[in-house]
Image 1 (cartoon, one colour):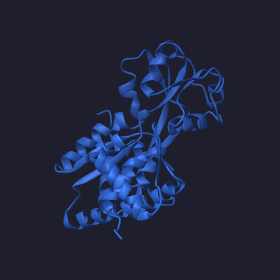
Image 2 (image 1 turned 90 degrees about the vertical axis):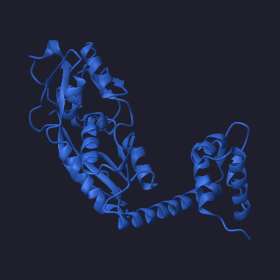
Image 3 (image 1 turned 60 degrees about the vertical axis):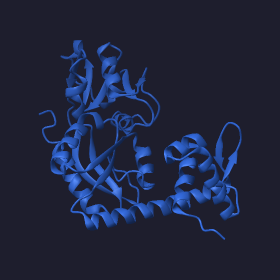
Length: 299
């Protein structure tokens, strides 16, 4: 009886993720017939069907879903073993895959990249920008090595390293620059513009305003902080943005910035990685560079 191979597991993982033989074949850099043959051989070895196939889509069977969980654990362990060998041989890493949330990436990432490149000129830095939930999923599956986001995460399998606190500021139309700064209770009665569902910054803003769910009065949503600020400049309402976003997002909008009185809304920015990672020492060094990158961010 033939034994399954790591190559077959990677082909299986690609097909499970893409749900399409053609796209999965492209990801694996092989022909579609070759991929189909490998998946068929894998199913024969296992003695069970992994995928339901029809003209429109490919989906995992019940057995395939259970097999996928075990396959991911195996592939992640193999990748970590490779990283361990690399970390033992090299003074630093050859590659690091960093995830970062959209409300940090445009403002902090240029400094991080510059400082990392300066410290480690040969380091291959790969960036993945997406929302917190997706970053955690990809980190646990071994598709990224670390993530920069808002803490806490409270996942038992992940290490959290706090780096710095960041305040939120109020953005309102420039015609309102001399008005008193509203408190959290007053914000609930105003037209507060928020990021769409899925962004942790949205949840933090709602928490400050003591709004449990949904939108505040006459609320509107945007897909980015830039969109929200431009909407404020057009007179559609007010919004909150993180301090690091102010220099970039307000330079071309007709808005005014105001800072809240205590207790000020803020978030903790930090890094996370798998507790099982073989790159812990190197990631700790990278976290120091990220923290340093946040100092004098607008300078």
